Length: 254
Image (cartoon, rainbow, N blue to C red; front, side, top):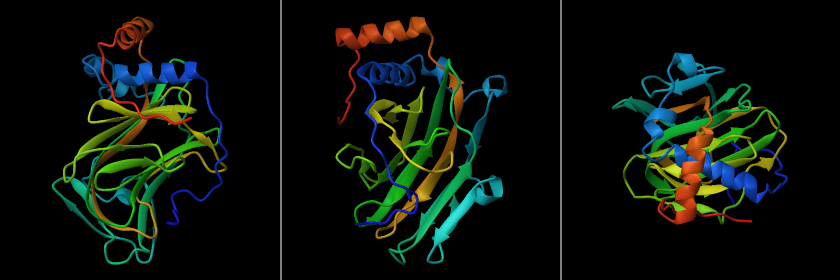
């Protein structure tokens, strides 16, 4: 079984309520439908409090405030077409990920959002590129990616498929850092729970697994806090869900 330097802690499961899951889904759906341009666009400076951080693929991440974590010499790396290429195909013991330790959690009335655009171009093994979110209160959620699938590292039976060989946009959102929704290319694909861990509050992404090898390309990675969807919009989205007019594919466990 692959050892994952991205996740070097012991998860402790804690299942949240159905109400929290529904609220999380409401927040996520509000960010992928037509109102998204108003509510969930990359926030201007006036809405960036308490923070909004963007890596845009134009330079190596460690030159833009990220900490590089790597082993076995790290991946071959280059910038091409405005995206960071991580090539660890030379050795399955290579890992090369990027982290930022800081406070993450949203305040009441806010929504935590992490977005990234990724293509897994070639893979040997189960999965390799990874993303992890670790909250201020020691709760986390992490995903790993194959060429066609995203997998919840804490619950490998929770996964969603995507098209081979092209870039995909992923967006994770959480209003409480206990429940999450993950959208792929604008449609919610996974909803579930964070797990309790012992670790610093941080975000981590990159070539995160040992035992697999891949070539991945990262167009951007950004995260921060935005205003939570308004009550009126949440009621509209809830009505659409209950009436069956808003169709999404949701994979959940537990």
